[in-house]
Image (cartoon, rainbow, N blue to C red):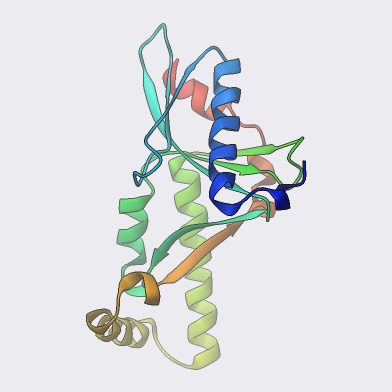
Length: 176
């Protein structure tokens, strides 16, 4: 099946249930959360130890996923508040052969922070402004506009995740 035939709103479910399948194949219990909640997408539970871990699942057929929307002046706080668990990125660009990239909370936080800090460094150099100048302007805009319309969306490309391909042990080791 071609992923272009899938409606956008179903691609997330495809990724979620593919991850549930993989977790179940490891003799773990996969408990999807309500799909209209923010934060965790599923809970993986070890039936013998009763240890559990929450997971976020991002699925795309475009080999990239937006992770969060944040203003520059509060990106560190936003990352701390929004990155609450490990992430599993599911690449369904070839639906019959999905790829799974599993990153710990620390790994995804480090990658996202570096992406934003590199962007800020490049932006400030290109435009001859300081980070403080940008933050002041953003804080003024915050008062007038809705966050989702004005915040930058930070997108991670799956190409940078090759080292995390099928690293399921980073999850199973946490709940053994």
